[in-house]
Image 1 (cartoon, one colour):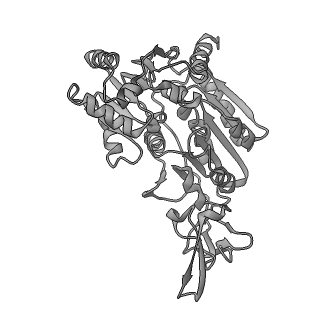
Image 2 (cartoon, helix red, strand yellow; image 1 turned 90 degrees about the vertical axis):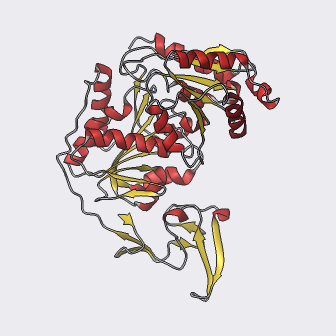
Image 3 (cartoon, helix red, strand yellow; image 1 turned 180 degrees about the vertical axis):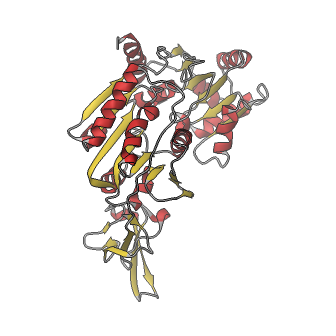
Length: 414
């Protein structure tokens, strides 16, 4: 069922109930996320949900309406420009079996393991059986990357793309979207694939986790994919099977971070630039490579950009509210720039060739972020290693855990 204000099916007489206070679309029940005003039209108070208002207002004065969508099957053949490894093939078969048997499953795989391609077989099988499929992720950057890869593989399939401000809709059979878009579906998808399950805002917003359940049909399969599964994810899945991949598709080991014992942040606050950082950036640029420089605060990032601007031409910065965010990401992908200063917005879901990574103030990041950041390098078969540099004032448990985890993954004989 597709939630739509002009729908011919009345799901509930009111889209927002007052007692108890709850939005029937997104399941929000937090009082501070509702707003009430006096309406001349209705001659009384109108309460609407602010949690999902960007998808259209849900109020206590209007019914929750929907549209039944007829299931349609398709040939759903896909193109894969490389052969899955033995480990990937086993994982793909496990996902296929779980989806056919309507079971939930967790794919716990290192970054760059080829998780998206591993799902192709179960997606094709689902669509060939007229099952509706949703491939979702928390962040727009990740969604756009997934859509590009799925469109290139399933060339004859009509794939919907939905995220804030963008809607490319066909028949609501095969969807790629941010998780918030699931608010508009009830009892709809037979197979839901959730990528980057440990990423914000999925890690903090209970209504988003609930939306996944509500959007699923009674007999469904949910596939969770992540490099760093959290206890929250495991609890949500309940009884489930776990498939683990500790090697990347190209078989090369994961890059191990090098520690640079430099307090760059302290120097930035004094409007000074760190000499080791400049030296390292010059080495990377001279070797014809690109680099992501992660900075923990936007203000510090802009300050660093100002201090470096007179020494490097092919450099810019990006953050979540940057109006030119996607243009800048494409610029480094196409090698139009060499240095991109960034917040954690690019810690996951993006792939660049010939890339190194520098983390400023690594002691400010948690384990999950550090693992994802390390996963940006060495993703391409023609550049399978890459270099990672952690600039830090002191050692932290998260830094130690990151390095030891990578060393352990590299040592495991799969």
